[in-house]
Image 1 (cartoon, rainbow, N blue to C red):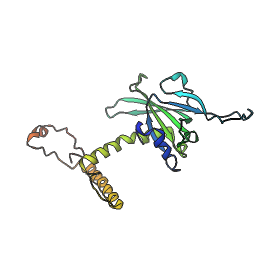
Image 2: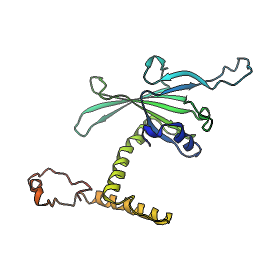
Image 3: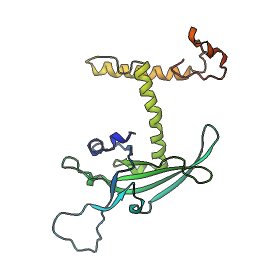
Length: 224
């Protein structure tokens, strides 16, 4: 899973070289993609460069959108009890423009649009667009892809917390094996802090006496 900075062809073009890797990344809502051009088998072949790209698919212009290949509606309840519905629309065999170094016409992907609506069918957030690319992408359902991307937020929190509090990237060594061991140690530390959060108690500093009166405060891994 990756954010929009990693949705460019120079990153994705490297990932598709690995057969068992499926990359899911968010894309900006102003991107332009293309349907894969499928030649009519009854049409006579012509000379010249073969056509790769079909109709334009402009994310900011819904007049260029075709009917999605799949649509799924997934209900869920927020922590505050709010009932919402996630509508996941998917377009398969999409393409992005390539370069001399990255022949993206050889790597079609699935494009997802995520829309969250309330019980009155009103869209409550800006639609989110995802691309799913990799030779094994069809082994994942649209719902699987969405659920996988949602895990990115937990991962981002882990990396931020690990760098700020657990010295995840502070250990300097020329030995890759030692570096990997240190990284694993920081992950184990994070898991232990998370598991101990319900056993820990608030021990405020002298200037944090207000915490003693807050009985509802939740202990986070960073406070544990």
